[in-house]
Image 1 (spheres, one colour):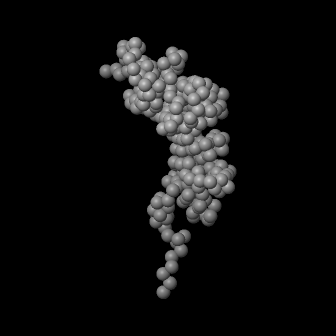
Image 2 (cartoon, one colour):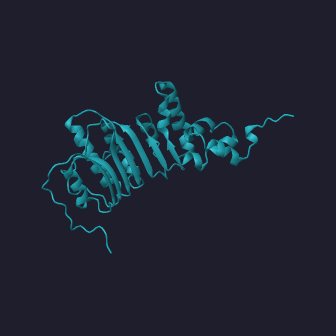
Image 3 (cartoon, one colour):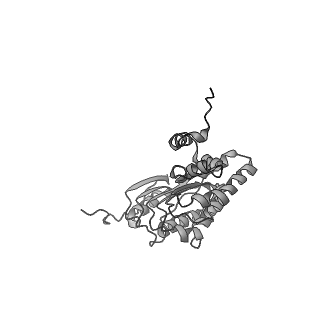
Length: 251
């Protein structure tokens, strides 16, 4: 008696149970376009709602394979599923090509890791197409900067970038502006212009240079803030005073 079962004879529920144990990027790359049934299952919300494309870079020094995978995602896979994508995690390998597609109507969470400060600044500068398209759409943003250069202008870029994001992304509620452990940049907020503020951020996670920068954050510039996770590089006596008359909560 032949007990062999063709995988295509399994019901959708059983196939989804199997596929859910795999990385969704692998599922999309391996199954879209194979046949009608696998194509339909791979396009389901289970595998297209949240994508971590940094896993493609895990192939290490095999640059040819990495480039081939990114090209297939950019030109074949993403155009078919971009209407489902709500969360994206990208690194420098994937960032430019993936964000250039620009049409992600449901995207609300974006995680950018291992960025050089100059690349991050080009993405979030005033005139960038990314800002103009997503500034009212992104509600959860994670930026992880990696760099070791100590040039002063890069420190300024870092702080001005934070200010631009706070002011331009009008529906941003959760914001993590982080630094890789060996990165020497820190935020200097105390000298930012007073018009730099956000009326939407409720959860903020970042690293600042001095305690005065913490006071700046708590001095009314973030009127809806209720959770602050902060790493302070230097704590010393300060003469700054918090405007503790600002009313954040009404009875």
